[in-house]
Length: 246
Image (tube, rainbow, N blue to C red; front, top):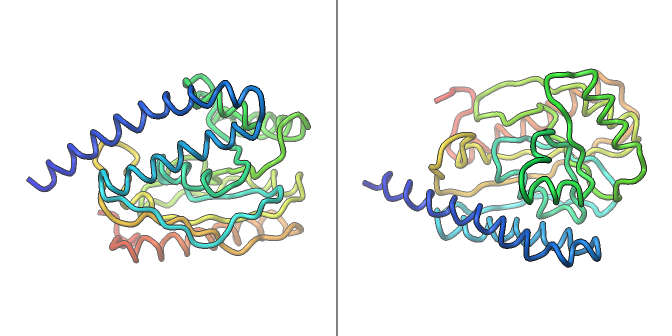
C-alpha cells in the first residue's frame, strides 16, 4: 500500500513537472527574447520549482555541497536522471549544456537550449560529434557561461560502470578552461525509467577544480576517479551499495 501511494504521488508530481515546464517556459519567453538575463532567470525558476515540489510532493529533498564559480568553466557531471541536470543548472549562473541533438526538437527544452547557447551533439558518431561540438563551442557566437558536459555520454544507473569519453578532454584541451567535477546520488531516488520517485535526499557535490595542462590519460583518470569515488560515497550514504547492483 505504501508503495502504491508513493507511486501515485510520483505520478502527480511528474505530470505537474511537465505542465509547469510549459507554463514557466512560455511565461518567461517574452522577457527572455528581449534580455538574455531573463533566459537564466526562467531556467532557474523552473529548476527551483521542480526541486521545491519534489521535496513536499514525493519527499525527495535536494542538497548541494561545494560552489560553482561565476567564471567561464567546464562542469563535468555524473548523470543519473533528469533531476541532476536541473540541480546543476540551478547553481550555475549561466548554464549551457552539451546535449543530445534530438532535444533541440523538444518544445521549450530545445528553445531554451538554443537561447542559453547549449550545443546539440549526435551521439553514436564519435569523431563527427566531437568535430561538430568543437566547431559550435569555438564559433564565438554562444553566450559566455558554465558549459556542462556529462562525460559518460548518457545516464548511468547506480552500480553501472561506463567509460569516460574523450569528448570532455577535447573540450578541456581546446578551451583551456578549468573543469569542475560534479558527483551525485540522484539515481538512487530518481530512476532512468519509470514514474516512481523514492523519498530521500538527492545530493550534488561540486568537487575540487581540475586545472588546465594535464595529458589526456592523466585528465580522464583524474576526472573519472574523482567523480566515481565521490558518487559511490554519496550513494552509500543514501543506503545504496554501488558495488552490488540490486
